[in-house]
Image 1 (cartoon, rainbow, N blue to C red):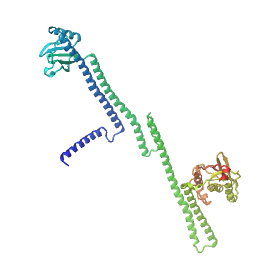
Image 2 (image 1 turned 180 degrees about the horizontal axis):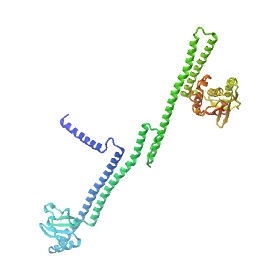
Image 3 (image 1 turned 60 degrees about the vertical axis):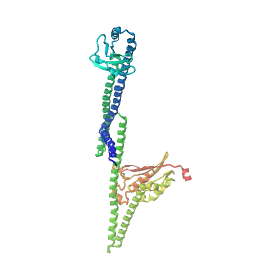
Length: 498
């Protein structure tokens, strides 16, 4: 590349760099919203005021001078082409004096280098104000317009030269009233623009304060939330609907995040408890089985003791097997919604099947099971609902020492209400919110002795949630408990068609 070409390429790059630096100086890359808004207002309003000022100073001022020049040209042409030719030479001074007194104009008449008459109302005007004739050389009439400032104000002059006759006429007039009024209007307009610029800058500063104050409040609240103050609300003191909506939505988002964080913390706590409970529940049967197996290895053990240890080991093994089956069942219900297969069936038949299966256990404890219900059809998974009823009635038998267990079903509009009531020991109020959690037991020792895994009610909750329903409980210590849930009602003809 030639040196000339290198130089030709360097100049635009330098200009672009200069313009870029000017732009970066006016609009810095990292600045507050207040600065950006203020600079934007100042730039655009300033450009508007500058444009109007240039128009006022150049165009309007130029039109005023053109109008004044045209007015004086008319007077000079009338004097040069009408008054002077029609007036005898010896009467020209008196005629011009009369015209000057009547019109108030500065009149000067010259021919060649000699001034015939000059003055205003008889007052002479210095000859220095006349133009040099060599500046007005033209084949036709030529004119020169200028103005000068005096102690009395601004005076406008127009000198007209006629090459044919050799006459030179100069007409001078102080700034007329309309010209002064126009200049005052021009000055007023300029001052008004400057005032508008100042007011615009003041308004832009106020507007930026109104905009940035809520943003700063939102930023400070967000910073507090980041630092861990999750209960703090974003408060914006403004009448702007957009900022109020923004603060409202941010508070809703904060509430949602707060709920999710609380839920995650609760799930973490439950997971920790669940892992601890699983390890505890699994460890006990394994230790028991290991102890019984070590004892069975003794050659001196009598057959009756050996038989009892074998039965104990099998019981713990069954308990461990039930525990793992329940855990697998809960996992399947949580992560596979397709395990629910709804169909139309008679709920009364399912209740009677469960009652007949558990009646021997109830009679063993001297309890009465009441399950006299009318036929009613529901739409649900028959086997899963059977599992729910089995867990609820079995729990009622396990925790009832005397009295009865009643399972009642009633139709309520498009739902079927199912409840299991017992006259057992009841559940303390502080435990009611947690009895559906995994491995949660009101009386852990007695539950383990009864062979329960602590997952029955949790499975009930998962099955009903998979059906889109919820399980409810009411209980009074010493008087019993009542569990109930609802299922979708189905007409009998639906069962026949199915």
